[in-house]
Length: 639
Image 1 (tube, rainbow, N blue to C red):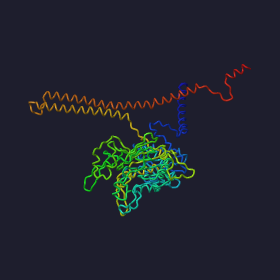
Image 2: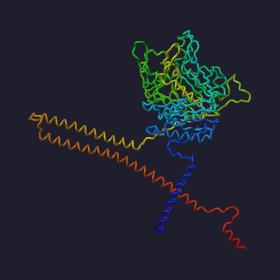
Image 3: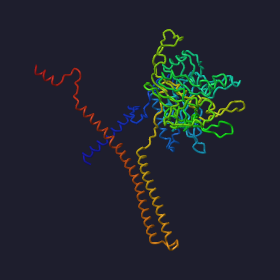
Image 4: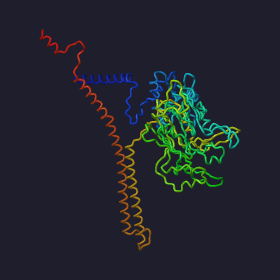
């Protein structure tokens, strides 16, 4: 072996060792660094989550139960499982030691499996032997409080950051949020003057009582406390100016508001008797406040929707008829990009109105529930004491527009009382009324109050004297989701759903569709020619003199040979279409490999060389106190 070759192999060995060393150094020194170049910033933690992590005061323990070995045989789960693990590790790293992450792979019938069940993480059976697959998260705080995500549903992966951030927030703030509840409808139970009996609280109100610290707010209230996390307004009407001013100031302080307004509240029992109720005003009166918040609501119109009309039985023994005023809104009408409505199956509403953003308002208006395009606004009077719902379709003219029945509104707004507090309102000493938002408003509003009523979403039965409610619609989940979201901090509310992590191969799908279109066109042509040939054979058969079915005439034989040749040609063209599809996909794959393996590294290398060349050409700056060579020569010549 020559000296030159020895030096060459030595250089290769030195470069390899240098590469390995640099890889180890960079792996340690650049840990936690990332550059998110995905289209929807899938791997970038939102600022709201960062602020929640920084607000943690006491240590939190997170337990990630993940059956990693079992996940190897579930390709639909494994990539998402790795994504969840990476995300949790990043959160723990950003939390400055306040989050202790424990990654556990529970073995069947082990102590870890018992621990998962104890913390609220559920396993999914994989086989008849009882082996379970675990993919959930549990957390505990210093006061023995605990929260859990029983199972990470891959269909909800767009809400991964929100779900985990909510769990951490609830552990960091374990007290039940305070909710002020103002309602002119009989939601809290009590004595019913029309029946002379005691009535139970509405089911949705009972559910909210279990999760939040509810405080009933009177329609004459003049103050809303600073500890109130959510203000609920149900069918607000005839509110005093002082009460409206208190709501206005709460909103300008950055309050979180959940409002239900209605052009025709079917559950309104404000009248003394049914006869008076027929002519009573059953619309919500909140126009002054909503207008200040950039939302327009017409209390005189109801959305009639033929596309979502439910069938109702008007009288016993009669067949049900469709009522365009009672709507069953499915997933197509519920926003799948908002945590409040995503994942809900159906929500039922009755005589609902609609909401629109006021032109020029500096707010963000995001629809949560919408009608179909087969809808038309109608006067609310047509629905009052409606005896025959089929009459709603007389002269029905759908506008082709979708009407927003529920919306989320955020942004900076102005006061509804620009002239100052109303008469009779005195502010505490040193306190001034706000003219504009000190913090952004967070408002969720629905143009229907009847969706809260039991009859639209639960069946109530008595079991041994105990009321049992069975839900047939997701109205209750809708309300609890909204309360749960708004009860968090503004940072938590700002954490929204994002695009899914599983991205389809759009180019490949486009090629597949093009090839399928050509394939089906060729197939249709083949069937058409086959039919024509059979017709020709039948015609030739009818003209034969010899009626024997076993003897073919020369014309028949020639036609059959022609058909066989044509069929072979068409089959060749079909195979060419399929081969072209495979070739196009392979060519696309080759292009991607060239870009990833050669082009992109080449561009980075070229950029590095250009940076190095620029730095080499840049003149060196002499250290302070040293003189330039030219200055020394001049000094010597002077001497």
